[in-house]
Image (cartoon, rainbow, N blue to C red):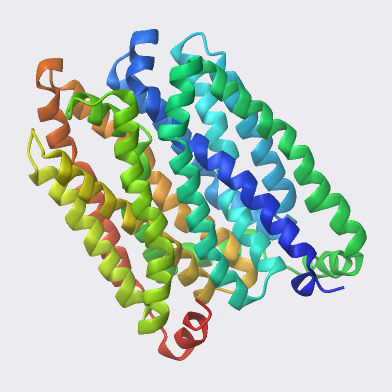
Length: 422
């Protein structure tokens, strides 16, 4: 039986997508309690920024190694391992007695999270045909936004009801148990149903190219660096901000309660939920991926610029609109991986996906640290001035994303085939 024609592929897709949904919700959830952690553990903004950055540092640093290993040895076991590590990290986080354990636990979460998305992309490449793959990228983008949405008002209400430790403990236990389900559905059962496919894969692996040769070729490719910069500017600035300083910004600058500040982030997530499907549809209609993606990056750049230009006492309505537009651009970031899928052979999709994804989370590493350093320069009574100058950082990052999309080389002869599948 062919995996790409089997109905079982939808079981695989649904299961890994659910794991991705849960883990995405934990990627930015600590941002809801940033100010609370500062009070409970008596730490500065820079330390909280360091904690967030350790998580994203682990994520970004492991993207290329995990991509190479997953291309070589298969994505299933790495996806399972990532789920276990994320669950253990959440459990340790819930019991943290000091800031050092907090940082270590978020490092584990970042390491586990680093194995999820790129292996999800490889799994889709193996189980689905090219046309289906491009369509499902939009679904993944939607689920990612919904996962992040869960980490705003719903998770904030849970924290308000039970304290911040209990929710992280329960989610950690769920992920640890879920890894066993993944093992059964991704490894044990497919080994029995698709034995011939796995035997062919083993034979193919024997003649594969050297990992280091593949790596050298990838890092010298202009298209790989273009997608790296696209994700650096579009995704990292957004994830880095909402995962660390989004809620404190609402509380300290806009005088919102914690729940109201988490609702503020929801407007950005609503933009992301709309952005993914809508941009995919527009791209298919105009038949120019690069042109549409360029406009997306321009919107993100102007939106971050608007947040900076709004001054030290911004209008709430203006902030809502700009957050929505930033989220809208981030929702369209799945186009990065459509470019990867179109530009590189299937056996290199994992490592290039990891390389591109690393760009997004490298900026997510840098932004919380630099933003925290800027905030520490200002006393609490003028913290709104600190946030004002802090917004220069995502403005510069989004400018680099614009440079990346300009670098993309679009081949007209192949483009139409891919876009018709959107």
